[in-house]
Image (cartoon, rainbow, N blue to C red; front, side, top):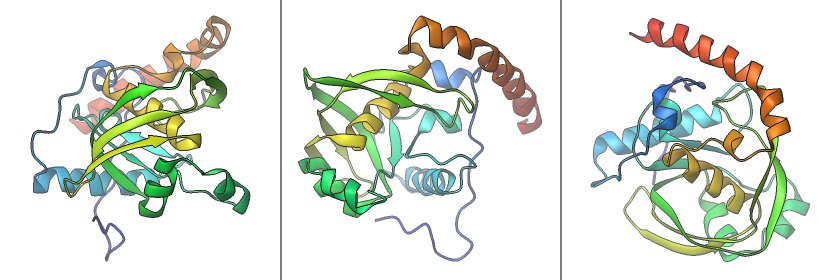
Amino acid sequence: MLNFFRGSGPRKYRIVYNGNPALRRKSLPVTQITPAIREMAERMLVTLRDSEVPGVGLAAPQIGENVRMIVIDTRPTSKKEARQATSPGEQLLNPRMPMALVNPEIVSYSAEKNVRGEGCLSLPGIGGDVRRSTLVTLKAQDIDGREILVECGGLLARCLQHEIDHLDGILFVDRISSEERAEAEPILGELEVEEKALAMMDV
């Protein structure tokens, strides 16, 4: 289990914005959970925790790394949310959050879907309604290599679908209506310009 609150802790990453090539590449599987992968997971968790805009998930492409790993924190923030977190996945994983998932994949999707508003730490200032399955079956490993196979609902199911999309080079704006996409285009362009400037500073 990761302990990213110790001492001064690991440094957080810069979250990349629209226009960074890593956001559109298909990520490669993690073949071994090495110390480098564990360190990346810790730094991703710190990045998620300390992001300027609140978020519930972060995928490795969002920090410029095309490996199949995500971090999530969909713990209920109210008693009402806690009562609604009834899926086996929520009951199993919520107490362990925030956590990293290695090589996560969704092996089944429910036919039932709903539409909810989404945003993205790599696309600040943009929101839109996305239709997703209400239940998904997650297959993954935790950072200690333990296998996970569980049905997930609620915010967890939506977060998993959003973050695993990132691993396949898909952004939530690819799934919104054409009207919402048109409204987002000016901000997408601004973010691309900002990303190019920040990338030059990173060199």
